[in-house]
Image (cartoon, rainbow, N blue to C red; front, side, top):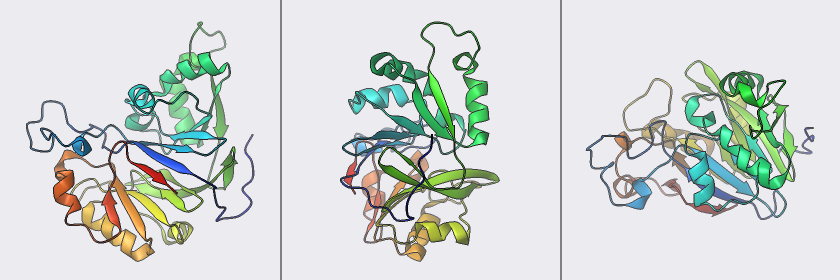
Length: 267
């Protein structure tokens, strides 16, 4: 059951955001790639598929469960998870959902999953055994909750959906109080930009330097941050084509940063 969100800009006391993965669909390093980024010894150049963990004193919430979800949970030492929130149904954002079985076993309850109808259709198609009338023992227990563009809350975390465009696919970004998270986008309509305005921190995708058909490139991501006037921004969904973390970070305007796996923000 969704909880109505009281106001557009609800504050969230002591919200912690952990970057579980900041890479694009192939991850970094990319399999078999000899480039200097994929061969880098800098841990900030090691990028799993995109996901974040949001934590308050009462709620633990993950956004997206890509192919690296199991390892991300182990690496972040997550012992309890209250819900999963999905941005869209592409494989690099949903493929790891089967691994909620471990949380089912230790928490003795289904995992609450929040997704729009388009994403739910893919989840049911990709994991049909989790929704069968007769279930094999040990399959994931998933409780689907349908969301759209209306605000809601998960536990004590208010959620403001923001619709962005991934070429022709509608993707959901989310605002959590003063923190906004957007992945897989190359266009944001003016009305949706208004939902971002006033955020203290914006996370947004910046795939590479060259223009891309369905993702913001580095120049476009910087321009959006400037247009929105957000004081702090972190880029995610980065490919090896963007360049090495240290090299690109040195060129960024004040207040704009490259996120990296393991980065933790106190919002």
